[in-house]
Length: 76
Image 1: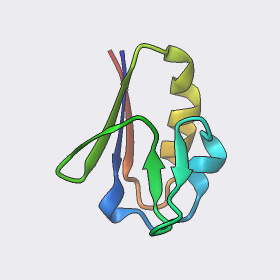
Image 2: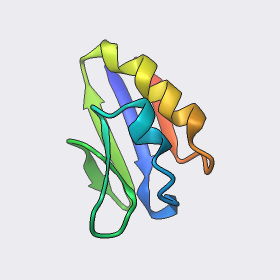
Image 3: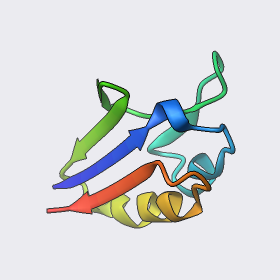
């Protein structure tokens, strides 16, 4: 299982996550912040749980590129 978490409230809209992982992230046209596609919101933490381990590399690149460090990736 791969768990990707985005703390969306702290997003500054830099777009790096979309550049690194365009399948998992997109930018909102409403507020210019990142959206973690197919995620569930729990108190401002958007979490995607997936059995697709091929997303790990791109999501880790997105997490490393994020200047405000609001993306986490865990593999179980």
